[in-house]
Length: 341
Image 1 (cartoon, rainbow, N blue to C red):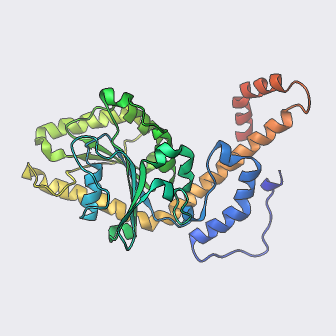
Image 2 (cartoon, rainbow, N blue to C red):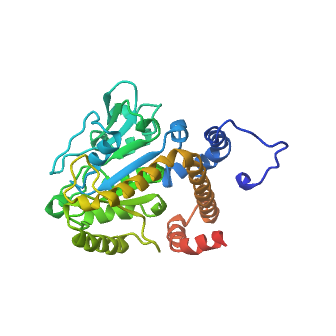
C-alpha cells in the first residue's frame, strides 16, 4: 500500500490554473491508484482532460411540458439548433447546448469519440442512448460561460411504463456527478411526482447542494392558489429529497409571453434576478467546485483501495474461495466500519 505513504516534497509546486494543477496531480498521483484497484470498473470512469477544462454545466430535469426547453430559450433569448417545443413530450433526447462559432447539431455517436468534449464515457450506456443524445452548437454570449443540458420529459401515468431502451436514471446520475447546477422544474398546474420522476430525483442523491427548484408557469394561477401550490410543492419535495432544509425554490414564468396576472410582475422579476445571479456565479466558483469534487473522488478512491486490498489479503490462495467469498461479502459492513475507524 505504498500509495498511501506521504512523501515530503522538497519544494512547493505551483500551477498556472487550478485545472492544470488538478490534471497533473490526477495523472501523477490518483490515476495510478485507481487503475491498480479497478476504481473505474466499480465506482466511476476515468477522468479525461475535457473533464477538467469544461465550462460549468447546468442540468434541467422535469416532467414533460414543464418548460425545460423553453427555459433554455428564455436564457439564450433565441432558438437553438434542433429545438422542439410543444404541450406533448417533444424532447425525446438529451441535448447539450454549447458555444461555437458555427451553428450545427452533433449526433451522440460522434460525441462519444470526440476527444475535445467531456462526453466520451457516455458510450457505456450503449447505442440506444447515443441515438438519443446530441449537442447543439450555437454562438451565444450566455454559452461562453456555461453549458446547458436539456433532458427528455419525464413521463407519468401509463406512459412511464414504456421502456426507453437505455438506463435513463443511470444517465441522470452520470450528469449529476459532473454538472455544477441541477434545476428541477415543476409546472404550477401539475405538481404530482410520478414514479419515474421520483427515481430520477433519487438518482441525484448526494448532490443536493447543486439542486435548485423552479416553480414554472406560476402566472397560470391566481395569488391565493399560488400560495397553496407553493405549500404543496414544499410538502411533495420533502417526501423525496431527504435533506434537513429544502433547496431554494424560485417562482416565475420563464418564457417571453405576456403575464396573465400582472400582480406578480415585481415578484417574478425579483425571483428571476435571483436565479440569474445564481447561474452567473457558476463560472466564478467553477474552480472551487472542481477542487471539491476532486477531493471527494480521492477519498472514494482511497476507501475503495483499502476495501479491495483487505479483501484480497483475506482471500485464500488455493482452496475454499467460494465459501470465503460469501463470508467476506457478509462481513462487508464490519470491514467498512473498521476502515472508517
